[in-house]
Length: 187
Ligand SMILES: CC(C)(COP(=O)(O)OP(=O)(O)OC[C@H]1O[C@@H](n2cnc3c(N)ncnc32)[C@H](O)[C@@H]1OP(=O)(O)O)[C@@H](O)C(=O)NCCC(=O)NCCS
Image (tube, rainbow, N blue to C red; front, side):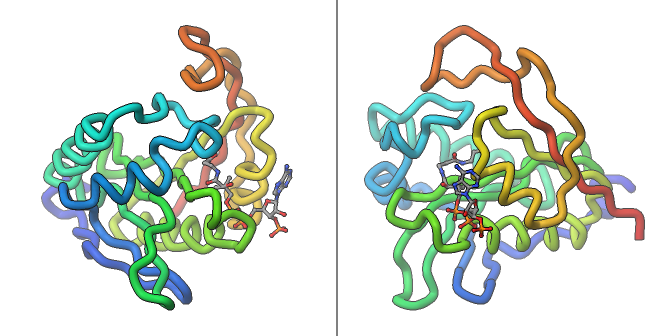
């Protein structure tokens, strides 16, 4: 399938409890205040904890480019009730029109309520809808909560990739082991 025949994702998605929408430049302050600058939240992320608002603005510029290039991109996660509390981020990162990666990050006060599971289910449905054939996600080998979310959503453990990803908030300049999960869609 060529990129021109891929189905473009809606910029807003609703799940049972959440509203997911494409980020805009105006979201920088809220993202910075809620999660991107929190060392506890970003511990297992592959990007450095944001130190300045400009770090978050640079991320939002990247999001815009990604959305311009591919059928979908990053989403911010908000509560539906009460409306509009920012909880975190998720999304699809395309490598080709048929292959995408996903992930999720939630503000600390949003952990343990099933939100990551709800978001991943939405991203799996979206990947299928936009014509993705293979959806992947990786997590640090010791990040058991994240691995559990992927397993709950039916992603299959592919194995451990040794010395694969740098986690700059754990240790700079060293690639660490990750577990890779994937789902393939053929219908
Ligand atoms: C990891 C994270 C996304 C989980 O989000 P969440 O909304 O709390 O996840 P959910 O509530 O949907 O599910 C978490 C599951 O993991 C389980 N869990 C929590 N801690 C665990 C641990 N240490 N070991 C194994 N399972 C664990 C929970 O019990 C729950 O499973 P259950 O529903 O069967 O009880 C969230 O903590 C987060 O955003 N962390 C910071 C960013 C991050 O690390 N993102 C992932 C990068 S790969």
